[in-house]
Length: 53
Length: 489
Image (cartoon, rainbow over all chains, first blue to last red; front, top):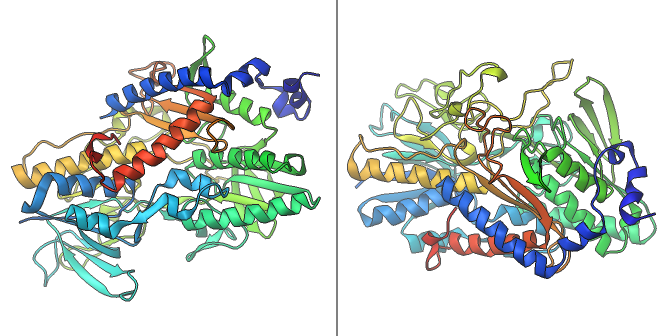
């Protein structure tokens, strides 16, 4: 059984939602990809801050 | 020379006072009345609560900072406001009671020309039997609302981890301690930091972790939830949150009003009216918030507290308090200038202002128990409101009473939130989120009430880096280090 599939059987609550697979989880801690996301999130946050003042 | 008195030295009060002192210079006086000697970067209390930071890393002494800014600092709590003065005092004044070491209980009258009420909330532990009492946190649960509470929480969590290492299974319960709580985001962040710490300690399989909350659905966060673009879809935060809980094997109990806390056990009522119990070995339950209990008196001594403050103790401002039923709620109900409608030289900022109504859909059980989150006012809105109010007051002081008032509606401002799950730069993952606007505007953004270009959330290391940066940036700013005004709220 794949890692992400184990929790589905633990409760009805878990069974009705979505759980990320290996690729999605890997990307969360991939430093290169996260650096790109860091830049993107910062730009979005700066825009939100700018629109809020 | 006119005098501005700021009640409270938290995010909103500190922002208002420091900007006012900078803009007014030495031509006017700024006084800050706050019962605490230290400023606390509250978002990082989560890391203190799991032993990843010390109290000293999230706090600093206010006195030297205010001395540098030319602010008159009084370590005291405000007791009452006389917005018309009294029979013996011509000018409006605040009665304060010192909390400073060596002067405890000493009373003083502080006259003002303008007043900013930024007292923040009273942590109303007494609202739930056993959660605490009028003196604060009780003995059965922990809290991360203050740095001291977080230190205590960390100590209790470590005891729990030791028991797990010794082979004793532990039940961990995190969430809200009453049906009318806010700040679900802090509890949300704390539960995933605990989960991360247990993994690090190698005892995750020895713990059952459960979330309990007054939200009617997971991911409500006191904002009625939010919608964000993910993988080409626009999805509800419900899916986002449920996925995170399922992935981390954290069960949830929602629509719950915690009605009683005892040693190792809580009683709760659900939205369907049923009641039940939940046992725990370690529980962090957020208390509901209330106003700090300031009284107000007219010139002849008549009690006018109900005129100045809403029943929940927060100060009335330029909000529409007569919006009525949920179907009639509009973004325009929310205040813009935060000026008290009765006394135009009084303003409220941050958590101290009375919201017109909640943001989430109101819910109650068949027994009539209200079970819904109250509106969150996190650091970014509190800081922006504090700055706008300071700007208005400075203009009133320097340009006269017809000066333009600055506006900062929560229905026109966003908020950035980062919920960490760990503290490492290469391990753990955080949920970074922005929401725009905080209060949904269904007339401007039909369907979701928000701009989905700027309402988003994603999980990853980048959120950790942002959380670290925010921690250092806002502490740097609050200490008024060089260039502090360039850092946005």
